[in-house]
View 1 (tube, rainbow, N blue to C red):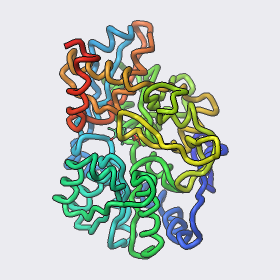
View 2 (cartoon, rainbow, N blue to C red):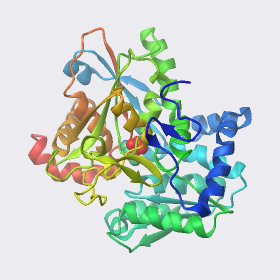
View 3 (tube, protein in one colour):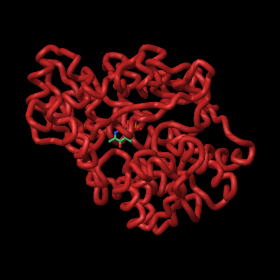
Length: 398
Ligand SMILES: *Cc1c(COP(=O)(O)O)cnc(C)c1O
């Protein structure tokens, strides 16, 4: 039994599990019974690999960054998930789960989205597979993320604005679950990160593990070795991080640094740092670290980056943090912005604000010249152009 593989009942140590309403048990049981065999099958892998290559544009390059190497001292590579179709790593997971939905004979797909990135990835693969698709989104987020909402509608998705509660991600998840409860037989719930009830976290990690598989092959070619000394990734729910570390988890010599959204700083009450500031609890069907107020209610998270603005964290990163396998740092909005401007100016790459948190973590690290470092650039920053413009005079010294 490998230490960082999920166990039979869906736990990584104390984290994970499947805390779901009784009516959804058959759906989750069905998924749990088949997901490993389906994903592992030759037929699935052939189709998945073909689509990753010819549709999503994989393998994504492993790019040696001169400016980050100078800054940190080692040989720093960026894993360029920003170059994928739809602009982030999310397409890997969406393609995989859509294939699974088709295999299970499901006739419709539902998803929830906060910033809209996962909604766009889901609407994209549903257009490709001809699957009707409904995306739940908080009404506040619908207002804040207009361009993504319009994209989803153009792709043929039905976008449902959820008016309940704070009208954000949390409420969108509840609405998606209510839909699933109502139509359990024909519906596939496509979760966008390594969160939710078992088997989702493990399934998403397996689908995203194409990232670490490629890193291994690419490092062998570029550096003559199959693992880096250090890996850096940002964590919202934990899918790009899980995929980036997957094949290195059991290799203790590989250092893992994960960057949470520190927002305006720890102890300001304005962060999304679930590991650094959360307490154990149950969120979205899993036992994990959750941002909570003194009364134990879920605290509204905050981050400049919409994709990291989530009050929980997947069970695998929670376990990696608790066992000391990963170092988790909270990177502030300001650190992320400064790191983003540096990459834009030095190398002409616009990182997503989420990915800029990984770069912010990197800015705190120093390495020996012979050390090899891989940081995952989870997505591209086109969607964040307004924010970059807004703060440019303050942080970019233009
Ligand atoms: C959604 C998103 C994230 C955060 O999600 P994870 O599941 O933690 O990877 C990070 N980067 C980008 C570009 C995203 O779109």
